[in-house]
Length: 630
DNA sequence: TTAGGGTTAG
Image (cartoon, rainbow, N blue to C red; front, side, top):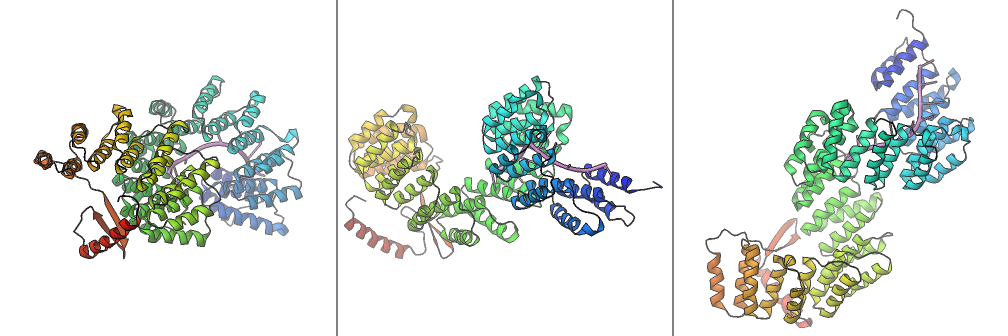
């Protein structure tokens, strides 16, 4: 242009901002010949505010505009609204409140722009009371469709769908695409996925077309529902209208396939349109790691240059679910060495899970120390993870201390503490915790009863065990699972009440008589030297688990215990020539930075002699003090 | 020529 003026400069800078090219906009702004006025500043300010990674430039520029008062450039209502929106994006309510103050001072707090932006900002920052103050304190003419939509969204965030609906249906003629989209997401955020889909359908019936936001919201719903069929339908729609170039839509498609467990489709969708999209890649990592496919997960994880806590946690949880604590701890070392982000509670929970698996207390203690020093919020999941870790690492006193100091509790946390006490032989405490739990209004679940029954089993408390077993079924309407039956049979067997064990077995449906229950019953028969029953169990057990070598050994031992060497020989003979998997339970001890693993009758350890001699003393002491058979 | 409301991953 031969003749440029401030209008043409503003127009071209605005065009770059509009098309998300803030770098070019900044370059033009900085040129010596660029003519600038307040509008130029506001334009670039909004560009910085909406661009990820440029937020601090916006704050800096706003400060600079403030200082330029004497040059005739000041901030106006446009600049303030832009900054309120930025406060919402950064969920910085302190900044937002100051801007609200500026609005009041300059008399700009009663416009449709200020009302909608303030409602949005306070809602995003979780200050619902302030949202209501702004909304109720605004004159009707300043509450337009934008403010109305902001209010619907605020009610949805607050979890008050009914209020959101009442605004939505009070003047249905005012509803635009954004109102409908807000409601779809609102339903989904509050767990009403089916209703969200119905709203999306009725949106079209009301003559409003789906836009990219609608499609992204619907895909999000389908991920939660794990609906492959409708997911494919929406995918087809996306292919027709070309909206896959939208990053929310493309990563949404990838996520639906991941959540449905169809990694083949997910992989091709990711390669076609999710490549280099962090959200799509994250979904892929989560998808693979939740299926235990850690090689694939790691390949994608390594390709992410800017890792965040979401992808880290996905990897941690993947290894943890596969029960590979070494991989979790190795990844944790990698995290400490390379990650600038501070670990949050979910990262810590994953690493604590690995410590629990390995009975390795040191890293757990370090995490505990770190969380105390940094003052991180101890949420319920984190407290539970500490309780579990300290219990499983042998320090139930620490576990109790953390449990006692927690302000909030839930069923899972109680379960961890009850199980911890049970495993350490503090059955009275377990029972007391159960009382506290039910009195506090927390509903016990099948895991609670598993912990209580295992406390009874370890201490031979038949009557208490029967009481909990009965109350689980009758008072709490929980059907016993294999673990509960196993506990009871074990309990009866050790208390020499084979008659009771038989009675219980008779009451279990055929389908529920799985190998674990039969195995427990076999032990009960063996302790009570009932060879006839062992024979009966043998047939059923080998029919279900004929390839499990441990079952043959268990049978052989059962016959041996009552002196039936002929039968034992027969079982040993049967084993020969078969390719059998053998599993043996092991114990782990973490001593001097090294894991020591022990199985029953193990003599492989380099300090075997010392260990057995100590074991001899401990066993002697225990049998003297214990009233029960060990 | 500048501003406000709705959408993703643990």
